[in-house]
Structures are given as C-alpha cells and as structure tokens.
Length: 151
Image 1 (tube, one colour):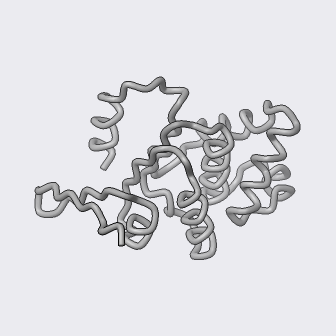
Image 2 (cartoon, rainbow, N blue to C red):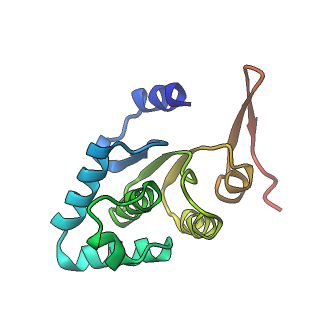
Image 3 (cartoon, rainbow, N blue to C red):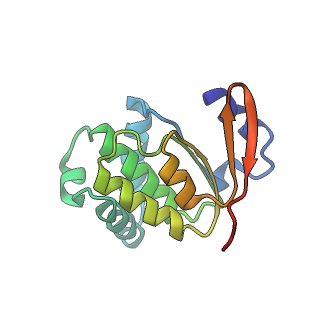
C-alpha cells in the first residue's frame, strides 16, 4: 500500500501544501509536529480544529493536557487539522487504524461531507463504499475499477 500511495503522490500535480497525506502509522516526530501545529494556530482556527477533534470523539481538554496523545487521538488530530485547512486532496492510508467503532462512524460522516478529493487506501470495505465515488480494488495482482450505480 505504501508503494501505491508513493506512486500516486509522485505523479501529483498539485502543491504538497494542498494535500493532507495521512500514513497508516504516525511516528513520534510526526505527532510532535501535529501538536506544535495545533498550538501555533490562531485561537479561532484552533477552536474549529478542536471542535472537529471532539466530533471525532476526543475530549479537547484531554488532548491539550496530554504530553503524548494515543495513536488514535493523534490520528483524529491529524484528520481534524487537514479538514480545517480546507486541503484540496486527502490521501488517507488506513484512516480507521486505531479508531473504535463510534470514531469510525464519525470519520465516515466527516468524509462524506468532505467537498474535496479523496484517495482512500483501506481494508474497510464499508467505509470505501460509503465515501468513495470510484473504487479500485487490487486482487490477485489485478486492478479492478468500480463506479457505483448512482441510483
């Protein structure tokens, strides 16, 4: 999957700052960068991000008080920052990783409302069907395209 995401990004013609690329795992430096980015935001924008974090199921006070958020909390913060930035493209690799069922459902709702483009790499078939208009499935080394019937 990482190779697929890297290949897609290598051919991207939009600026990197117009994309949110969320890998399956966030390492410590990435989590530290997310926290620093949150703290550097103007108060009104930070408030909007924290509202999105809360909508994804994390108590903002808990996140702000934590020296090291859990992997799920960090993932929700990264998603909220990307959604608040109005990025043109979200590239999400297994975005439901480390998320419980209520958080998965809230993520699905947020992605359904997302007005931009989305590249979703996932094993979560229900999420893919709920939020994607065109799906490519890789099975037995073959790529299959599927566009759902709009009815």
